[in-house]
Length: 371
Image (tube, rainbow, N blue to C red; front, side):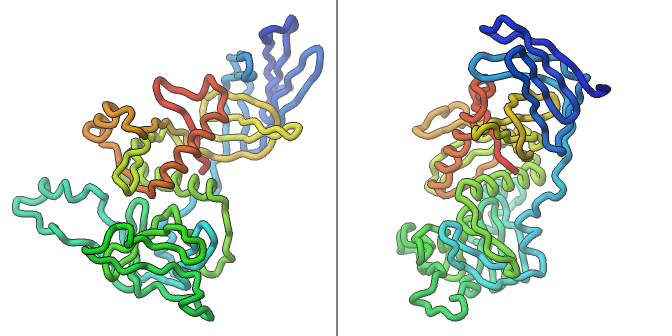
């Protein structure tokens, strides 16, 4: 075979060698006992001549280091701003139960809000007292203002779906907020499932968390997704948007309760994950330039973002947190506390799915998020 490259390796605890044959589209492992071929999806091609490193790690599997060629994704999902600025009408759903939150809405203006720490920089911009002190950016009717992790809409845009009374409606009922009311009473709750979707920020404006509502064109049928898949999709989209627009790759994930939960470091978004199925079991194969590979059999290919993370619950890693917040310019992302915990769990599950030798980089844990 012109595109075939063979390696011989001895496995620990075995007295016989194995032959490894690498072609552009497959790996074949042959021993005196058996022979197996692992076919790769057509989106991934190997470069056989670059295979120079083969190692068997006890309890983990076979590692190979070689170059790969992966077809990039055909389409990149539009940002929330690009999506909502289209001339289509949109419907917002509660992510937990699918209840309609906002129906048949076409926004006339979709504007980004300043970053959450913008007010601390005003003194650098102005030589006179802060002209923006005690003033808020609030949307008018048919406006949508986008923050990093939320959007603001005017209460006038929120109405019961046709054919449903207000009493039986699945539309969340925002509780009017004023200064005298506690923050607990400003929560926007889905009437159907009682999930917290956002909060009222004034008598005219409601904030919806992007991790709690599904935004779809009204012309499309409602598409339910699992909570894990939805949170993963939203978080990786936010990280990619912010890294592209602000050239920041370090993030401090904090809750709306002011508590810091997580430090997140985006390494790259060009890694390819091949999930492999063999005899009912699932394995994984990662390709990123000349990355390591652990192979079991074939399935589908998925682009993923590789991240490093470190949890900060119980006030751990305080010295590193101070350094990130004050020296490295890490960007803060504010999420509902429950979503912060869900993200930690998601990263932990993805971390433990890796072979043990690939789970850590110095004191950081390694994980991936599917794009």
